[in-house]
Amino acid sequence: MQKVAPPQCLQNAFDEHGLGDIDVFSFPDGTHSAADAAAAIGCDISEIGKSLVFVTEPGRPVLIIMNGADQVDEHRAAGLIGLPMRKATAQEVRELTGYAIGGVPPFGHAKPVETLLDQKLLTKKTIWLAAGTPKTVFALAPDELRRVTGIETGVDIAA
Image (cartoon, rainbow, N blue to C red):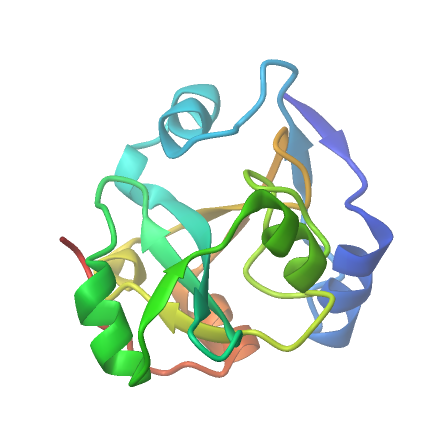
């Protein structure tokens, strides 16, 4: 584990939200999946906040930040959004967020993205999140994640 600088767009988002003192860590073997990230960090997989991008039928992006131990119930999530949706392609993820799959942070995206937070994730003391690349992560407390995303309450979207 090595401390590194985040991509500039994420650093700008940190600064914008008063998180200028966030440490970003790089892992040479990568943190592509929640399991990879948990193993590298040495935490429980449920403390990983995996950022999953979906697209609604009219093409609106939706980011679901899910705890690493669970899968998203896509039908339940679509019901909360009020529109049918599907997983975004790798190209769509990059175009909509500015990041590659495995590196999408919870904020600081290229375009506005509607966001849902998993309620189980918000019960954790610390949440580990992707920091712009499939090899980098940072930690936030649930209260900080709520504040930055503007989402007060998590939702039950686990399969």
